[in-house]
Image (tube, rainbow, N blue to C red; front, side, top):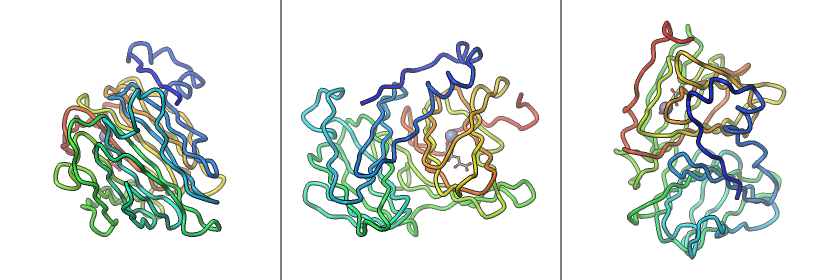
Amino acid sequence: MKVLHSVHPEDFKTYDTALIRERFLIDGTVQTDVINCVYTHYDRMIVGTANPVNGELMLENYSNLKADCFLERREIGIINVAGDGTIIADGQAYELKKFDCLYIGKGVKQVLFSSKSSMHPAVFYMLSAPAHKAYPTTFMAISDAAKVEAGDVATANLRTINKYIHADGIKSCQLVMGLTILKPGSVWNTMPPHTHDRRMEAYFYFDLPEGQKIVHYMGEGKETRHIMVNNYDAVVSPPWSIHAGSGTSNYNFIWGMAGENLDYTDMDAISISDLR
Ligand SMILES: O=C(O)C(=O)C[C@H](O)C(=O)CO
Ligand SMILES: [Zn+2]
């Protein structure tokens, strides 16, 4: 499993585009009939995708984990971003339509992914963090996610934030996870931006139309940088960094965090007028 190491904010100021991409971008993971995972040293979060097309895929026990199985000391949150799919956790099957979420707790030994149709396969995005306790495996359809309507048409950031795994939702040890859907014509996410020194975050962009791009902004509020990202790209955000994006079209993205607390609202807001 590829490893991403942590970066100091002072060092980040000297990075060029290529180095920012190398250190923070997780791209090319969605591949037919493959599970790809990246181990980050940000709260030891693993970022992965599974794209079962012609058969079943099993979450393997990577040697980096020095464990008897992937979830021996970990929990995992999974959201389906494409066609209908099935996840089997220790023999129990869960059907996930697009935007549905499954949390699987510590200790589950076998996780299998499959699609209902190879013509319109599922794409599962997953985040896994170390866990100290076994919380129950829990399914949540998007209709049951806690919703926050945010932004405005006038500032092109009208969007719905769907919260699945958080302090008042699916119980977890440290994972917080959800999905933000931008309305047509709205292209900005997380603007005004924030940091949360107590938690890392990862964004996974999807539903970006062919030929379009997203500008992902990061860095300290007074030292911002950007990279151009594509559909199915994920970006890791260190605790000192803003994480925001503007697209050449609307798009959706999954956000997920691990760290000190499970409180979604624990954010240090940065005013737009203070950004540099
Ligand atoms: O659109 C947004 O704003 C978000 O989705 C923000 C993320 O949920 C986030 O950064 C949570 O810390
Ligand atoms: Zn955030």
